[in-house]
Structure formats: C-alpha cells, structure tokens
Length: 119
Image 1 (cartoon, one colour):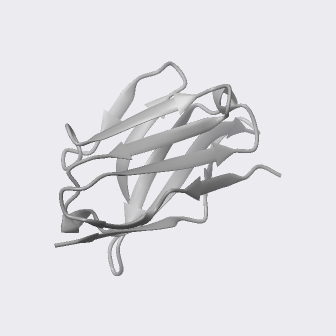
Image 2: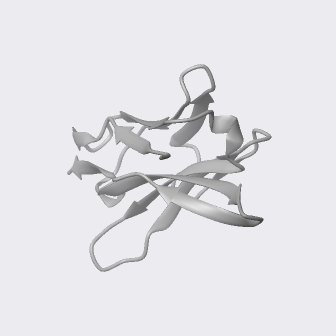
Image 3: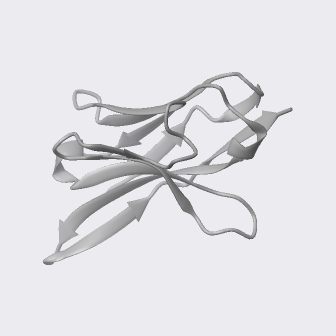
C-alpha cells in the first residue's frame, strides 16, 4: 500500500526557516505530480507548491520567493524549503501525490505535519 510520510514540522519564530520532507513508499516518478498543501481550522486545504513529473513547479502567490519545492528521486522524497516564515504560514502541511489508477487521476495524502510560526 502506498504511503506518504511527512516530517520536519515544528515551531519557529517569524523570519525563520523550516524544511519539510515527504517520503514516498514508491518511485516518485510514478506520480504525475507531487505537492504540498496546508490547512488551518475552518478553512479549505490550499495548494502551497507542487512539482510535476516533468519538473515544472507551481507556487501559491503567498509563498512565491519564500518557499522552494524540490525532489530527490534516489530517496523518493519531495522537500519544501520554507524561508522568511510568517505567522500566517501556521497550518498543518500535507504531502500530496497524484497518479493514474484505472484510467483516472487518483490522489493520495500524507498524515500531515504541524507548522507553527510565532510572532
């Protein structure tokens, strides 16, 4: 069974940095895309950054210039480097993977990791 396991969350002061890692249980190039989403209580889960199989990257406007998504195919990991963190970045961050299954696009989520930015 496929698994996505996030790590690297925690508490950091505003202006600080954190690096999140998503480790997949299979070759990340079997996915059409992988990404990071975040969610706060009472709000919908929103895209933070994603990377396609071909290497294209897409960022939310609020994270452009501060966050960087990268991958390591040898380790089957996708990382999110977060710099210049703001209290508004506080959320549970989820790893996401999309892949073809039965002719349709399927989505798989990790369990989430908490990121808290103090002011």
